Length: 295
Ligand SMILES: NC(=O)c1ccc[n+]([C@@H]2O[C@H](COP(=O)([O-])OP(=O)(O)OC[C@H]3O[C@@H](n4cnc5c(N)ncnc54)[C@H](O)[C@@H]3O)[C@@H](O)[C@H]2O)c1
Ligand SMILES: [Zn+2]
Image 1 (cartoon, rainbow, N blue to C red):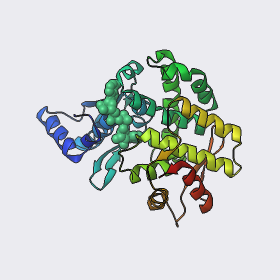
Image 2 (spheres, rainbow, N blue to C red):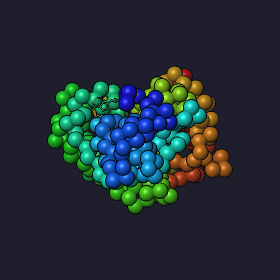
Image 3 (cartoon, rainbow, N blue to C red):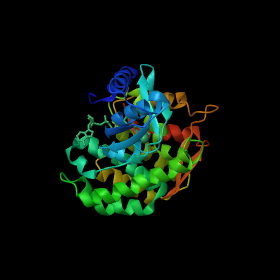
Image 4 (cartoon, helix red, strand yellow):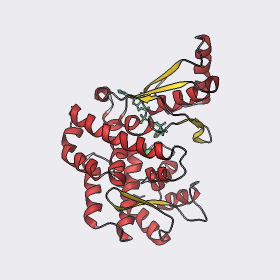
């Protein structure tokens, strides 16, 4: 299928159904999803629905897909009204990531993927954080060290698998994977998904969530600085410019996760300890967003 988010559509899914029936695909067949998160979500959705569901194996080829999108069984296509609006939970039989495929990934897409890896380290794994700090240079240079990449990807992907297998339908624990995403989703929505790649928006959102955690006395300044330094080392943004702060604040309150006008945040109580909080004072949210977003 053509590269790009536009392929995550009912139209392209329809073409894949037609192809599968031409090929006489059967219940016992297996769909292999080879590509980035777009291919994974699209093929996953088709596998979840064709003949009421056939087996799926994810073969992710982007950092984001290896560490996040290919794991967890969420599959969806987009509608004109919004992203991921039609979908299903359909667990892959296996996820096989060959990190050598990452050598051809465009640089910006490569670095972006580390937004979610840093997220996994901050919410779940102090040792992964140390690995990222130690191997930062080897991972971000033009020709990344494949052993470092494999070590970090294996560890980070395992964390996501651990969380989603203990909460496959997103009823509880899985919520902590939304660290940085309250603000990220608002930034993506205000910019119409055009300005920032997802991992970049998450990076800005994580800078906000860590700052809120620090201001609420949950983490010390050193922890905040460690996270921000690591984000910088991976070339990820900590701030957004060219967008209206009020628009971002409004978009946060429009989010489906808002209950009783209270935005829900995943905060840190330390490295590897995330908590869900809906009691962040409105003034602190405003002040934080003002620090992150400039017109
Ligand atoms: N299902 C989930 O849980 C989940 C989680 C996060 C994101 N997603 C989805 O994932 C998608 C984003 O995934 P992505 O960041 O992988 O984007 P993508 O699939 O669009 O890939 C980015 C670009 O890199 C190209 N590419 C992929 N692998 C390559 C390689 N090895 N060498 C050269 N080029 C390569 C792609 O063709 C594309 O142009 C979004 O649609 C998002 O909604 C899903
Ligand atoms: Zn994400």
